Length: 336
Image (cartoon, rainbow, N blue to C red; front, side, top):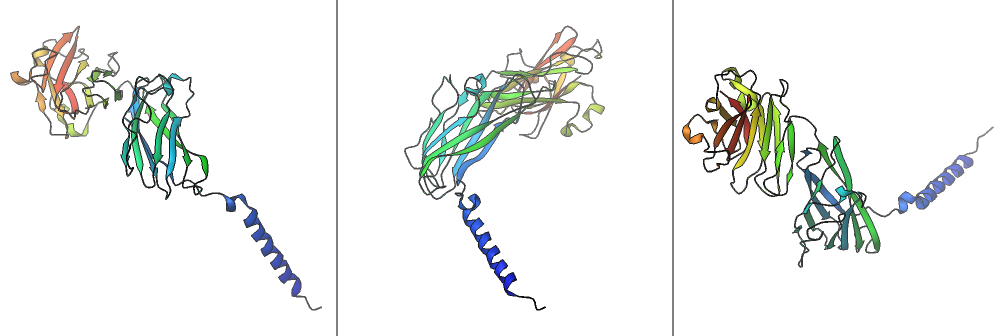
């Protein structure tokens, strides 16, 4: 029997028409283009903080579309009744490509008593805005995260000017560290201090303390048994305690202060405060090498910053406290 070629052709035509109909009716085919605006970056400052201390987030928002956004609002998805939803610091907005007048305080002025609420006004095409917002962190945990949320009204790029509230979310996240050898956070007011574990044992032979020297800057301490810049130093000198690497930006050329409380057990009884020196290593602006091996590098008191870089050493029970005044960051370790 001769086979017909008509039926297969007819079936192919029906299949093609059905496929085209699916494309026309499909929600994917009729979905609006995603907004050409949103969060460019959300960066935690610093990236790791001690639980319960402050973290700042540098938030950058960009309108990458071809149309202007007539009204741009921002909040978070934290519960309004959550104390952590209330910011502790908000900086001025920094605008790029936005015509005047500029909204410098879109999130209001201190003191802050309610959950974050920001109104940036408009954001024109190709413009961006950056703002720093700080919050306290939870007292426990290994991380903390939430979402910033943007609402763009009016002439948004996603729908050619008919929007009644496009939204964009951006995750904010920071590591929380309960490590006994770490302490850090964002300093609102100079004078805030950070300390590693103050319980001295053979396994934890040192407690490091750092005082934030500048407003609105980070301060961190990380203790360790070795640092790369020290090489084999502790094979040739009598190192005590641990290395403490500090980060406390001082853009105003202020001094940096803190102390190392070193376990005295194991240090010969003949060693006194006058025998203790401090190694200060780092590549930020060079290093001070040994501090305290010359009279000029001995502070007159624990509060004497005029002689910086200098140290002031006292004995507390059988332990030694090395108070330091420095001009730049680096890694520190006591020795005799």
